[in-house]
Image (cartoon, rainbow, N blue to C red; front, side, top):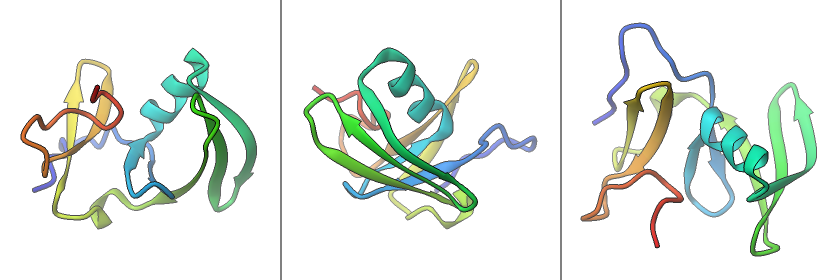
Length: 98
């Protein structure tokens, strides 16, 4: 089940080469914090290659939030929107697991 407010606060959702999904807010937060480093970016269509803190490369491709798999959920928390993997019993935003 996808939860999206009537005024869609989700700018963009990215499908990553690691099989996860990230909102533009999540990507921006990781880049600003230094957890990820941008290697390449194409604006139209929006695609990015980032290096993670573990020195792995992730390819991110913008996708329509309505096309997310059934096991994902968009959660809005204050000013941030997270993609949550609901297959996990913890159901935490992607990237917050220990």
